[in-house]
Length: 138
Image (cartoon, rainbow, N blue to C red; front, side, top):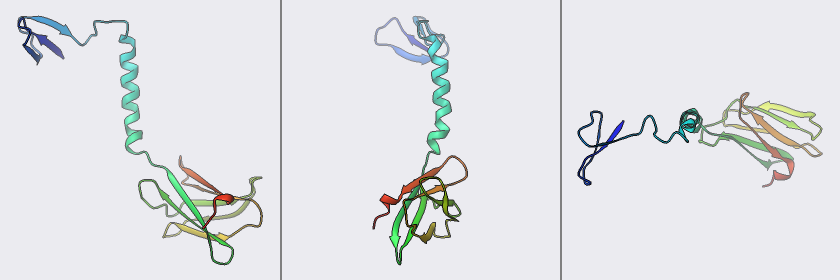
């Protein structure tokens, strides 16, 4: 791309064919001190675009339910449901106390363990979320 600035100081136009006048080149860049930054910056910017377009995270909410049970509901931050996601209730020493999957309404109910625990949901890929037993409040 070339920016042409005519002899008249009020004349400016974008063109691929330079008319008479001063020529300022944008590529290759005249100032070579920063030329090495152009392609890496462009590459990083373009590489980040697909991730930004599909960025969402997995959310998990757990609340007490009837008769010493806990009900957890999972969803993605974009509002889509998390049906079929794997859920594990674990003790702090990583022992699995309960294992299940979210049902058709993206929820799972289990008997509240006696000691300290946390609930972890995973989609089998890059998304996961955890809720600590201290956060299971009405």
